[in-house]
Image 1 (cartoon, one colour):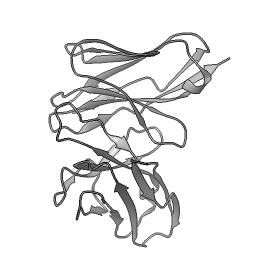
Image 2 (cartoon, each protein chain N blue to C red):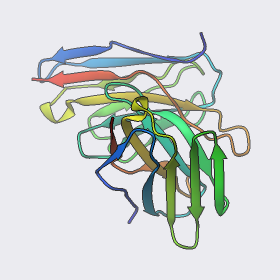
Image 3 (spheres, rainbow over the protein chains, first blue to last red):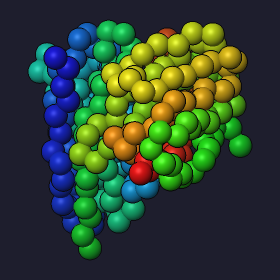
Image 4 (cartoon, each protein chain N blue to C red):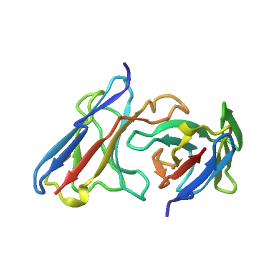
Length: 109
Length: 115
């Protein structure tokens, strides 16, 4: 079966660094996506990885290991506005996204 | 402003009623999707369309139907609503015609309550 696992909730301090992990198991693989979703709003695209390694985009970085079925999203210099849910999604062989339930990130001052 | 619009923003519906959720995009994207999002669960695909004139079933299609008469519009119809269809519904689109450009962009969502 297809499965995406990520922690339900994480708490971090403003200005710190947090890593949100995601493991995936899908029928085929065409890339790993991370989205951010603020409460009551639509998901917005953060990053896409299809090759092993780290992709850096400002304060956010995303890592992929295809052999381990593992990805993480790294958020640096946390700001209060980063309080949101972070959704991990794997694209399967049919180019459909299989979504995790999301990780709710709480930032404390 | 380019993007995806959905209507209505929210709706309370009596069980057994028919309801159509509207979705329009102006990005000329080939592919469009309907998802539902429920607490504690990931987004689940209801139906999709890879191009105008074609549609396909996702993970949870029962009780829903879609049509894709043109590139811009992708309405979702609940023929006879049931309480288990209470959810937040998101429409999304992607330009799947470009290699690697499979990013999905989401509309603002419709919050539907079936009583």
